[in-house]
Length: 396
Ligand SMILES: [Mg+2]
Image (cartoon, rainbow, N blue to C red; front, side, top):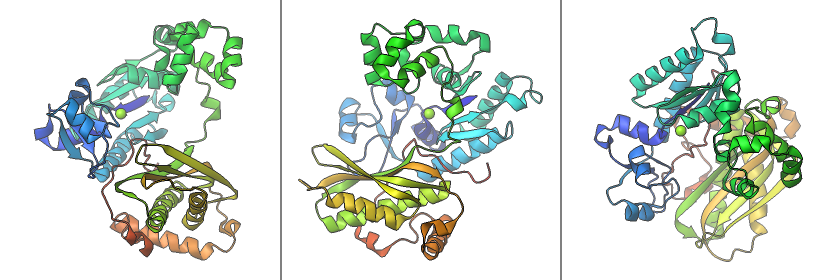
């Protein structure tokens, strides 16, 4: 079962602030340069899209109501939805702040049918949070997700094993998660528009054109999930944070302070998810929106913010900055589970204890209650978490 909240951030706002109901609402950060991170269905219908700037959106729709996002509220609601799902099965995977997969295989002796569970979950989410969600039920995650998206908004689509091919057949290829604009265009150029056409296309040609993806595409087109066996156990592919600034930053000292802040945020997430990484990247964006990324792979895995900071500042030093920057981003990739052997990171035990203490304080008193003094150089501004943000639930 795949469960996805409909227009999540915007729905949460409309549910908790009744005057927003029925209105086109856009959720944004507080800065002048913030972009739209979510919008209500009323706004979507009138052409408002995620990623639009405030200015663009107002020109498009002068009656649009802007609301500052409240991260805590979204994370909190996500955690409560997770709790609801756990009453039906212990096998719940949070795949983003508003999407979950629940394996119901073991629950079918306790409940009449998957559709009954889905209906009960939808009802409870509606009653408790005043928001709607879309649910897809299928023999695997791939088809469940496609079915969930298909039924949006407020949908419940169940696809039986024997109906999978028929369900997939008529869908456009871009219904398959992971097929973006570029891949869709490449497939369309081969005369492939629907999943049925993709299924019937010779896999040898697909392989020649797309490499291993050719095989995956062929599998997915018939509703077989090629990634099932390659499940990383919920391990994210990368963890990153970025910030767009109110004012472009030209001063390298301030850029470094921001990088320290971002590195600390990435390190904190690595620690929370109990993973380590050895690849790190620095992204910067100039006022003209040119975006550059450099990456570096270390010879060892680490969750350490200081090492991340040193790595990304080394990357920064390799840039000849041609202008001030409007955005900075730090990401960790090439991740693996943290094997509990602190001495692996030679000599850092003391520092790790320090960060553990800092995390504990920040967990209790809020993000950034304790932080390196250097980051005081940064004017704090409100930011909204990315919808791809995955809260860590300790009780799962
Ligand atoms: Mg959603």
